[in-house]
Length: 230
Ligand SMILES: Nc1nc2c(c(=O)[nH]1)N[C@H]1C(S)=C(S)[C@@H](COP(=O)(O)O)O[C@H]1N2
Ligand SMILES: [Mo]
Image (cartoon, rainbow, N blue to C red; front, top):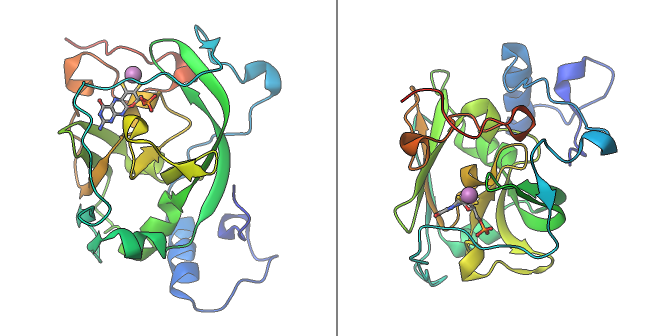
């Protein structure tokens, strides 16, 4: 999780001077960006309401599982950012790597604790692409045609990760390899498998399941499973 200095708390901790990263984070702190009010949960609140624990890891998707060779794989970051990028596998692999252990909560009521992931944090990606001030949402586009939408502050959650490995091994195709997003604080349909493009937007737009009756935000602790709207 966050081993880095946090600029939001004030002046106590010295930071590496004038790096681009530091400047960006200070700007975010000034703007109060990404303050979701989330706190570490007690063990008694760890399992969201209506969920049960599983030991295995179910596979859920629309059916077609795209096989994307590493030689042709790309991750494009487009839209309302200062620095759009199109990363190939070598460039993605050369980014700062983070290990995390987080829980999965699927809307179909299974949860799985303590998944070990490796990848690139969305915060580190944001430091590179620099969302423009008017950016408010992201749409994730996948190689199977799937889409899902997130508010920028949810995409920028401290524990959100662009994952390439699970339990020390490359993510299998069925679980979204080469690269999927993992956003642990939301239901798992927000965690796009076979990630292809991250589109920064100045307005919200519903993704595949959000258009089909699922909740736009998807907070498991508030049981935001289905949309109230028709
Ligand atoms: N590209 C893509 N991502 C996707 C989906 C999908 O169909 N396509 N399904 C979502 C849903 S509904 C769930 S529950 C999780 C399942 O991930 P898993 O198969 O690794 O458990 O992926 C999410 N991400
Ligand atoms: Mo799902």
